[in-house]
Length: 375
Ligand SMILES: [Mn+2]
Image 1 (cartoon, rainbow, N blue to C red):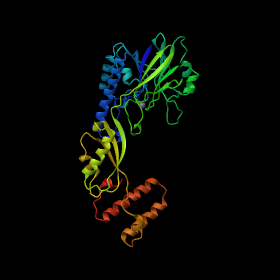
Image 2 (image 1 turned 90 degrees about the horizontal axis):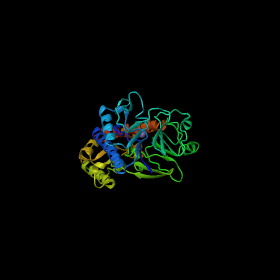
Image 3 (image 1 turned 45 degrees about the horizontal axis):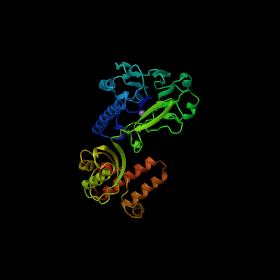
Image 4 (image 1 turned 180 degrees about the vertical axis):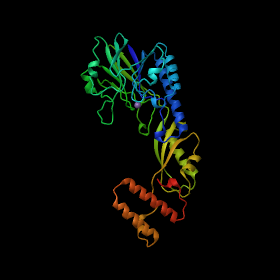
């Protein structure tokens, strides 16, 4: 029996800034990504697998530093004779500048550096066919993978299983695979997991940790593949250590920032009652508070280990129908802005107009206006 631990999309060194997370949180999550790779490789040793496979996006070339190469080399070195097979992806594309090209890898590491599929004989009965992304499309990759009689042909690549104009990845679908010599496709490129059922051949392990707000509740991990007499069985292994959650919290009737912070904390503990630091949350505050405080005040009132990004949803604290009837400066202003609102179909322009109106109405009421009241 041959056993493979298949991984993809770890994205070591990724920036979490696109999610609005502060650098301190990003640093913690990046450290956890490194620990995740360490845990995966420890499991591989414990399970005594024949190979660990990576189907792309192992690390981010754009943020890679010499220490990234040092870390990977040291991690793979401790695998001893266990084979490590890497098919580069989009973010860790193979080039003369990539870590793959200029790092002295231990002898157990093999990087597929060509966009054409090349065989690697893992055992007398299993051949791994790997290629480096980008694999040109349309391409004759189906012809590159030739049948080795008596051997299970396993494909290793960063790919997609659905045709989409947004993706430049090569399409490897169950349909396409039926017309090839490939019995099993160990893929990367999808951050959510997919494990074959009933005769299917495609494995996407998913990213072991959630990497974006959309990755909230998707099963993710690595996949242990066992191949015996040409038959494959699969087992998902999970490593998720943090959760990304999207929550909405009302600030109605709150007099102080501390009250809002308490409400947020109560919501967060619903997601992980043990460790506040294991939850990374995007919090949308809605409603109108009684007191006067800013998002920064709420943030300052939160426990230091809470990882939250605060947003204020646009709630309008006035009844515009009523105001529009007033024979006052306020009434004239509201009627005027409403006319402009009716004249445009641009959602952003409408939002900006309402935001401006809200600020002016608050100011006319003599209330302090904070910048984050805008939106
Ligand atoms: Mn990826």
